[in-house]
Length: 291
Image (cartoon, rainbow, N blue to C red; front, side, top):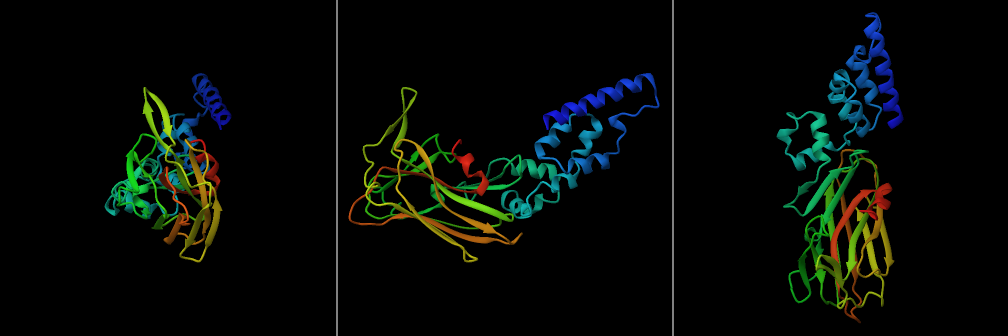
C-alpha cells in the first residue's frame, strides 16, 4: 500500500503541475467525494488514514460514516453499549466509534478488557485473574494477588501451595462470525525487579511435572474441547491453548465456559502465576507469543 500511496502522490503532483499551466487540466481535488469514499471502503483502516492526508477532499471523504461502518464488526452496537452506553451511539460518528473501540476498554469493574485490532477491526477480549473463578482464592494460605507491571491488569494471582488447582472462566458475549481461540497466560515462578533487573523466584515451583494440566472448553451451542499438557518454562510467561470455537450466528450472544485443572490430590502444586485468559481470532494466536 506504501507503493500505492507514492503512486497517488505522484499522480497528484503531475496533475497539480499541469493545472498551473492550463486551467482545463483536472486534479485529484476534482474527484467527487462520494467516489473517493467508495474507493476507500475497499481499503484497510490504516490505509484510509494515510490517504486522508492527500488533500482536503480525501480527508473529508475518509470521514464518511458508511466508510467506517464497513470496517466495524457486526457486533459493534453490542460493544458500544458495553463500553460507552447506548445513549452515545447516536451522537458519535462511525470513525469515532472505531477509534474508541480500538483503545483499551475496561469492563466489569476493570476485570475485563475488550478492543478491536486496528488493522482488521476484529474483536479481542482479555479476562484478568480477578474475573476468573479460582478454587481457594479467598484463602491467603493458598493464593495471593501480586502487583506487577508485567500484566496489562497490573496484578496476577499467585499460587503458593495447594492440592486441588482449578480455574474457571465463564462469559456471555457477542462476537462477529469467525473462529476464535482461548488461551491462558501463565508463568511458573514469581517475578520481580531487583536493582532494576527482572528476577524470577522459582523456589515454590513444584508438582507440575508429575501430572499434566487439563484444559476444557464448552459453548452454549454444543462445541467442546479437551486437551492436556505439562506446564513448563519456569520464569517465562507462556500462552497455553485451551481450545477453539466457531461463531456462526451474527448478532447473537454465545455462552462460553473454559477451565484449567490439576486436581490429582496425591501431590501438591505451587509457584504458579495466573495473569489472564485471552479470547481472540484464531489467526492471532501466533501474535500473542510476541506480546
